[in-house]
Amino acid sequence: MSQPTTTEPETHDSRHVHSHPTGDSAGHGSFKSYMIGFLLSVVLTAIPFWLVMGKVFANHETTILIVVAFAAVQVVVHMIYFLHMNTSSEGGWNMLALIFTLVLVGIAISGSLWVMYHMNSNMVPMSAHDMRNLP
Image (cartoon, rainbow, N blue to C red; front, side, top):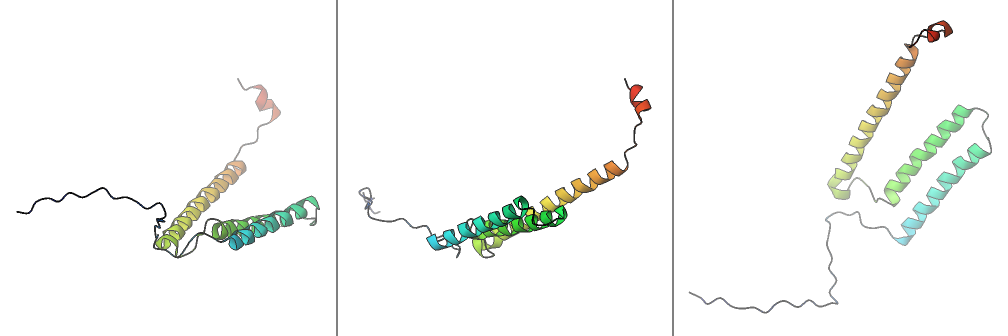
């Protein structure tokens, strides 16, 4: 039988840099990509602000639709430039989680709007006479 050998504790060189490869191509962004994201965010905020404050469109519904469109584009800009999301990050699981979240939010919003619309249209109007008889 062989004798167990004693080893001295390992000493770590303080100059050694620990790198942990993540296995995906989505790394941290560069200064340039962060600045592009920031500038896009500023522009995508300033234009809707100007549209609302300057009352550019006479129709409020048009203004609302344009502001919502700018908001959707800004969400995409934030996901790409700041959250570093793409189809290859984390093996596609980030994109799958995003799609699942969007489906759930869509179901919740559309269901809420549907219920509120039908409750409003099916309400029985109360007259002033009926209100006096309430306990």
